[in-house]
Length: 380
Image 1: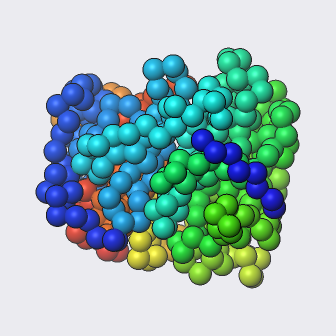
Image 2: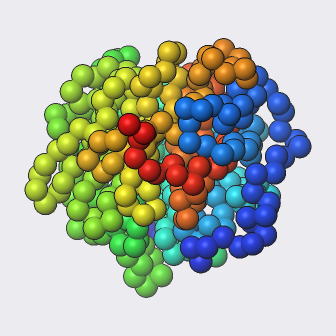
């Protein structure tokens, strides 16, 4: 695949650790945040502390050296941009706010670090018809329609377009992820538009070799996967040996908010459903590759969701957070949806995007300090 160029330490440092958990005084103490922060007191969860980092937020990615976090959020113009911050919340820089000459004025989001720390892959809304309400809504980072994948070289801020999806209603990309050593790039790509107000369309998971040749990114050996029936597929990346795909899909029911988490063994062509109770999504492997953390609505009395963990085969499911527990004294009758999250390199923290409005995708960004025993088996 030929790509057109367009110009435009796994350990934390001591200062970062010392500052983690300090609340930004500028963040408004809303009922939602009171409920979220107070949920750390629940005896049902495996969390030490929850600290708000931003009273807005979106999709997140923690750098492999632990020094920075990427997130997307709405800028003043109403469109999403990508920001880089420290884990303690300081040194915020917008990476895309001044790149409209190349990207247009549309949504930019779903950032993901390359393991080298030199590059960031992201989604960007296609230029045609930017500004139309329906098209803009469909192109928000969480939906990904009418978008392409781009790569930014951080040192020079050069931009490279990685995909060129059609300009019609069948276009879309979602959730790009690099393999842990950086040699492969995976993402979801739409190939058939949904029927009017019905379903999410038909998507496939794309897997390509990634390399830098003559200072330019190159994708090659592209392979497409639809492990189950045609439907919506949300990519969550590859396992350690690049032999398994982790993803969310609704291919067997097409019901909104009843998606399931799957793992597909590429070599064996074996598909396993790992989580299917209520709403399941946003799965990720732990840094030591021993557990999977995902969001689910199981055991919640409302339609909110929380983070849980499980073994690689889907067994031993354990609750991690308890955002929606009506029996807690800080419960404010708010529906909290645990959305995109990313591990710190040492596996002790999660940076998390929690949605408080599913229609507008309004949300907050929080730092979750996990218990030391968060990955131990469930108590019998």
